[in-house]
Length: 198
Figure (cartoon, rainbow, N blue to C red):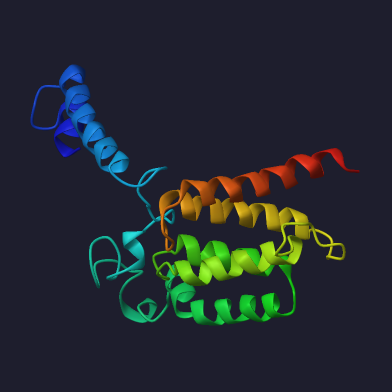
């Protein structure tokens, strides 16, 4: 990337767009090769951005700027506070999920499935939260429950899609295209049906 950027902007070498494109393409080809070498859908990547300024006193190091030195040194950025309070956030969402809050249950499933810079992925926990939503809507015999809170169908369909993705990729479960298809069909049938209902 650095070589391509240098050719693109003319840093230390004559500016040459063709040479820059050649080097950018080599990097892109390697990245795609790495991505496709993983499970269906590509390798997992953390979706949260990383800011160097949040760690180690900023881009130029501890004490290099007004913000990272003196009386400002004790102040923390939002991302670091988030990392320190992650347990409190998870505890709150878990409390709400325990009270039957559908959004909290689905959010916890997504948080544990995707992980972040401050929280490692936990696929078994994610699967448990998704299954709890699915089981509120579909009975063990596959039929739809009769009494369920408003919105359960929507979150059950989303959770079924997430479970299908887990089986498709083999994330925390044995890879099974049959199981993935079953979950995808369950989720999509509910989404299609709900689009026709008032």
